[in-house]
Length: 219
Image 1 (tube, rainbow, N blue to C red):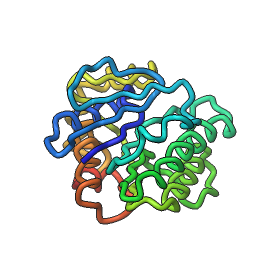
Image 2 (cartoon, helix red, strand yellow):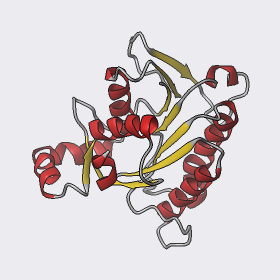
Image 3 (cartoon, one colour):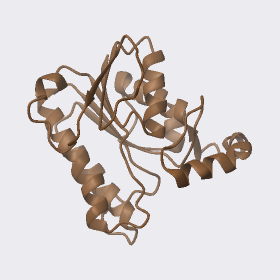
C-alpha cells in the first residue's frame, strides 16, 4: 500500500516511519511536515510545507494513497483552549478534509490520546479537543477511520521526543519502561507497536474505531 505520514519527525511519527520503511507491505511513503526527516530512502518522498493548513497547489501530490497516518500533535501544557484547538483540531481537519475526496478508498488513522473525551463536554480541555477531532474525522467519507488512544509510549530504536520535557521524562524512566511494559501491558505500548498496528489496521481493518492501548498492542 501507499501511505501518507504526517509528523514523521516527532517521537511517534519517527517510529511509524521506521516501521513503514521496514514493511514489505508498504511500497511508498509520503512524509508531510514543516521540516524534512533527513532520511534518504528509496520508497520515501517528502513534501515540506510551511503552512500545514493550506494544501492548494499540491493536491495532485496527495492523490492515490491507501492510508494516512496522522501523528502530528503538541502538548496542551500552558496553552489556551483556542490555541490548542487550532493546532489540534483545525490543523488535522485541514489535511483530512483535503485527503478524503482525493482518496475515497483511504484509511485514516489519527494518534489521539488515552482519556480523549468523545462527549466533548468534560472538564479536561485537551480531552474535549481531542474528542472533537476524533468525532469530526469519523464523520468524513473515508473508507475507514481509526482513532489510536495510546497511554504511555515507550520509544525504541534510539527514537527521542522533540519536546524537551517529554524527552527528559523518557530518559528518566528508561530503566523502568521495560518493566512497566510487563507489569501494565494495557497501559504501555511502544513506537514499534504503534507503527505495526497502524499498518495492520490500514491493511486488514480493526475491530472498532476507537483503539485504546490494549487494542493497539493486540493489533
